[in-house]
Image 1 (cartoon, helix red, strand yellow):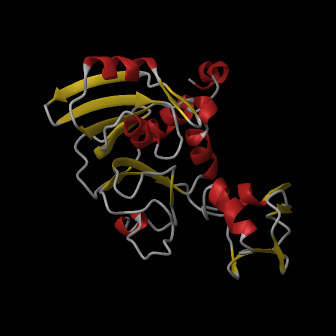
Image 2 (cartoon, helix red, strand yellow; image 1 turned 90 degrees about the vertical axis):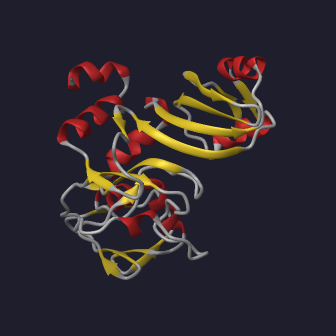
Length: 248
């Protein structure tokens, strides 16, 4: 059966669909000996020869689902032109190539999923499914009651409105504040941009949960396999509302 190349690549654990599209556009993928650059190109894994950077791919991989407590100072890509450490440097002894689900900024910390299941990653990241993510955020300066109320109501950014589903103030000091935000937004650096727009720089950002999975006692730089129950629950959350009862 023919499928889009980016779906085949994500299913083979090469990269997420979004990253696979860039690999195709960059000319890193060949189909039956010919470089392809169109993301819509289709292939049949049982009939066609698909290579990444000249290496033949295999679609016979065991599905792996990991959760990592990402330290600051790591990038959530599979390579970095600046030579900075990448999150997969922290994953040893898995046996399968995995890629990050979504992103955490270089300076950001906390919960990050890694997998070789492209469909799983795609659904968790898709904005229509609104899987909640919770962050602890430390900001500079004194937050006023009005600013907190405005944050709860929502803040307009140049690329659309930011509206957290929950805002909890953990600590207010004259020169800083700690808050806990639960959001469904997946835009790049959106939390940092929101507080910048309010005149408060983010000095620390830690993702503490994604869906129903929390960091709990997982130490900085440590990782573990997700349980089958956790994977099932995440799959359930990353579904349209009408499909959740069928899967539960």
